[in-house]
Amino acid sequence: MRNASALFRLAAPMFALGVLLGGCGQAPLSQNPDAVPDSRTGSGHGIQGKPLLAPGGAPGEPAAAGAAAGTGSKSLARAGTDPATLPAGSAYRNPANGRDEVIVEDIRHTAVLIGDSQSEPPNAWPRQALAALGYKPFFCGLGGTGFVAANGKTGNYLTALQRGDWKLPYGDPSLVVIQGGGNDAVKGATDAQIVANAEQLISVLQQRYPASKFAMIGTLARGANYGGGRRTQVDTLLGTIAEKNGIPFVGVGDWLTRYNLSKLLADGIHMNAAGNDILGGLLGTRLKALGLGAKES
Image (cartoon, rainbow, N blue to C red; front, top):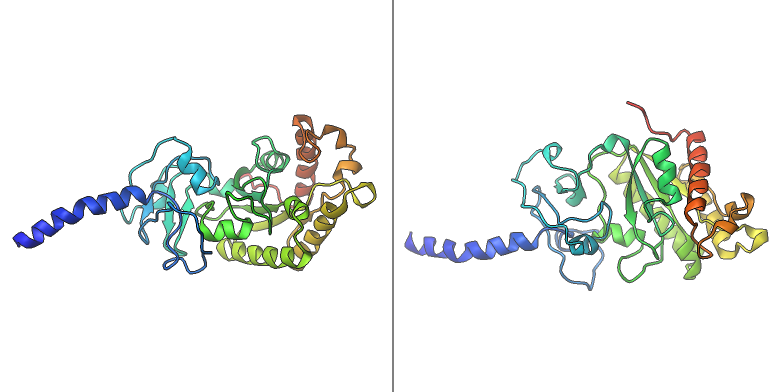
């Protein structure tokens, strides 16, 4: 008994250290069969079936960014805790899929928005459109990424999801929106690469959220006859992918010229504040016409 007690005293500090290091990130590859190997270090993991409270950071931010935000960390919740009792922003290891997910305050009125720098700012036009329809946008993504494109800090949409660069919300959001394609156009992604990754991303998300509505938003551009080039081509390609999968699609590959908005570009690619406001209104109208407004109850 004395030997067992001594062993416990030796192991207890090591266990406590493991808990402190396990605040955010995905499970190791041995426990996470669909994760992609990652050369980066420092991601901890929780214990299967246990809810855990992650370090601070905006919902949907990459795990590393959230950990570096300096907003403090919370202690682990007790095993078996009802996720409904956890505060918004907590990370919860979903026993149904083994993934760390984020607790949100009102999942029934949440719209998950997966996108790039067009969706990243708080006043971004896709976020404004969703908010106008009664949703609380939950952004997952980062500038410089896309269906194929990565930015060095996080993977493309598919790999970022698979390896836990950002985390989806726990529960059943009303709507899941996928926006992007601009960085794929700039970085030379082929049609085949875009199609393959987009198809797999849609499949993974629909398995994760079988009860949610889906929508896709294309690649903001000037149009084929006004210098839209590859960006407009990718927008058209995404439309065919959405149609094949039965997903409502809003093509924006000519909106800059159709609505005379090129003059409101801040840097040749992104809208200034006024442009975001106008585009947000236009997109909200289109999404509403597609029957994608949030339910009032």
